Structure formats: structure tokens, C-alpha cells
Length: 323
Image 1 (cartoon, rainbow, N blue to C red):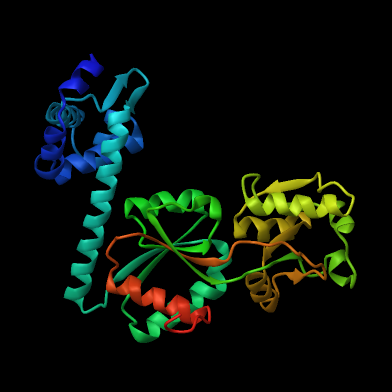
Image 2: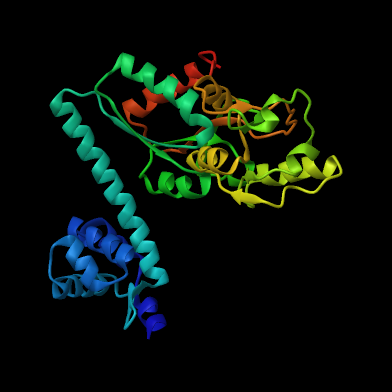
């Protein structure tokens, strides 16, 4: 039945629905239904009745001539068609929110708004300096910063929920729809809490770290593979007592609570050493890593605030104008 329905759904019909027939309330309902996977909970979130949600979904499916969600006793699950329409809905709603915020900012006398996804490697030094520069130029510009890694932030960038990504430019994530710009290299350093027994040693080897508790990057991170290789190169196995996390808060917590060793970008490690929160170990970490840089969507118009922040990030990284 679904294949038969799909066969009768023409490209012109889909185009007409996407361009003209879908209303904002339809898009909000689709996103809520995808988020909660339950008619009742979606209705509660939208402050409408469950029959109203069912009626609205049936109306949208009639427009497309396709089943967008499967209903069962366990709830609702999007079909492959539903997944595509929900992605479209999220993208449109993100553009709507951005435009609304920009209009409100102009009306209130503020300069604008930009949304940035940033990795830990960029947060305490590069991002902080760039935002300070931006605020010095336009104090009422709002910068929304969401911390995470590429796997979590790139989908949000593609959907339009973020204007910009700042972090390591992992080559495995390169794609034709993304525009990248390298800003600077950022090597790694091993760190511990102040007062840790290893902090006082002037000469350290990977064999010393192999006996310690460690906070390591997740298994899928390229850094994790390279760190493991450093231990094997010195003829020892990587530590057995480990916690896997890319979270800075997790690293700091386990440095303090478990006396663990962690690995951080040099600028981050030195910044928090100055704050007295950790100690950089006297261990060379000769690992080649991707540079820290920017990722934007190719061909997407940048808001003035986003472009201004990009210029501030370049200056904070020491990139010469016109490079």
C-alpha cells in the first residue's frame, strides 16, 4: 500500500506541498511528534488536544499522499518519508527563529544574533577572545554558544540551527556542502590535578602514564587511536583503568575525584593551569592533529553578526587580514 501511495506521489505534488500548503503549525507539530514519538505527549507540549494532533497529521499525510508516521501501541515512529519531512520542518523552523530574532534585535536597537557550535579545544581561549572582541564592537549582539563535538554539532549546522562551527577540522567529516577554514594548529598536553604525584616529576614517559587512571577520548576519535599508538611505541599497553569522554567538565571532575590523567589542547591546558585548576605534565605528546578552524554551510547567506564573529575569530587566532 505504501509503495502504491508513493508511486502516485509526483514531484510537482511534493513541491506544491512544501512551498504552499504546509503551515507553520504543521511544521511545529511534525517536529514535536518526532521528538516525543507519542500523540498524547506531542499534544500536551503543543497545548492542543490529541485528536487535534491526529487530525493535523492526517491532513499533512493527505497533502503528500504518503504515510509519514507509523502508529502502534508503542507510540509513533517516522517512516523514511517522515524522516525527510521532519528534517525539512526543523530547517524551516530554525530559519524562522533566526529571522524573528534578527527582527526583534533590530527593533530593540541590538545589532543582531549568531549561533555557534564549539568544541572544547576552542572554548576558553579562541572563542572567549573572539566574543570579547565582538562585544567590544557591538555589546548588544547576542552570541548563542553550544558546546559539543562534530558528530552532534554538524547535523545542527546543516539544519540551520547553528550558523557556525568552531573546532578541529577532522578530515573524515569533509563534505561538498561544507566550507572549512583552518585558523591555527593546536597540539595536545597531558594534565593532572595540582598535587598529583606525577606533577612533580621532571622526566616522564608513556610507561609512567600506563599505570595511571586516565580520561581518554571516545574510541571513534582520531586522537584516541594516536594516543594508544604512543603507548605501544614505548612498548607498553594503554591504561586499563579509563573513562572515555570528550567533555571538559568530565575531564576536570575525574582529575579531581579519581586522580586521573587527561589530555587537553595546549591552549586549554595552559589557560586552566593559570587558574590553578590543573597541572601540565612534563611529557611530550608528539601527535599530529587537524588544525582548529571554522566550518560553515557552503552557499548559505551569513548574517552580519555571524560574519563579524568570523572576523573576530580570525583576529583572535592571529590570522592576517586578506590571507
